[in-house]
Length: 329
Image: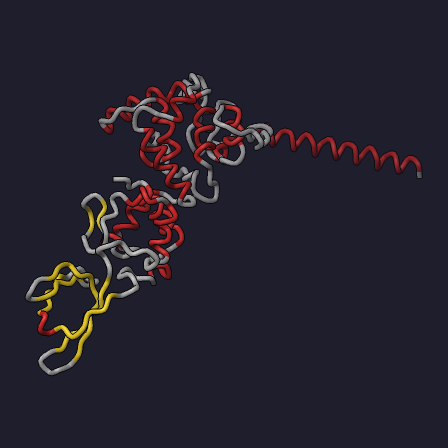
């Protein structure tokens, strides 16, 4: 009986040892043990923890021989294709982006673009498949994005936290873009612009203008970002809560030649001695003779359809809010 127990004990010990070895090997192959997420602030240490942890960057990227992901470019020195780490490589990519866009780019601008707007530049031989990291399910904060940038800078480059927080070139717009997206709960401003003007979707552009694009039925939204995220969200979900002065809707009752009373709802565009000009929901301007008007009643509801919240998707809603937050005149 004693010998049998010893054999069982030895067998269990060998089994545990093999299990620990396999676990250690797999951990090393996938980038090593992940660091604690308690590291905070904009610094390479916090960025490293996010890169290999919450940010899930290591799902697609490796850094040199750390990690085993090959779906997206290696961000270290690896093979014949990647002869410099991303901290140095970013400067060369910034020059490419300057030539392509005609805008000034620094290495920080390029790194911010990689994270904030990944479809803008796709490395040759790879697909456009990087997720928007400041949107669900990853949902990095603006500080966490900056921390990751500082970690990427540290890969062969010089870490410059001030340049990350106050980029001199195109990066400033990208930071604003990320900040707006985070405030909107993870929306993508680029998709928000498309959804805003999509006639088959939210169709906001059929009544509103942004920087001259759209139709001038409702208020111009080119500066709505100054009013903050709460105002924008409320204006979409419950448009009658706050109606912009000058855009009140009216019920206008008229009587035709058959003494039949008709009613239309619209915005008063103007009024003179002969009649009242009204804009209906289709954007048509109609002048109604005063002699035909029986009664005009100001509505308490906005002309903007409340049922929009019923058919707009959550993603489109978040994306549109993010897009509108960027509109600051």
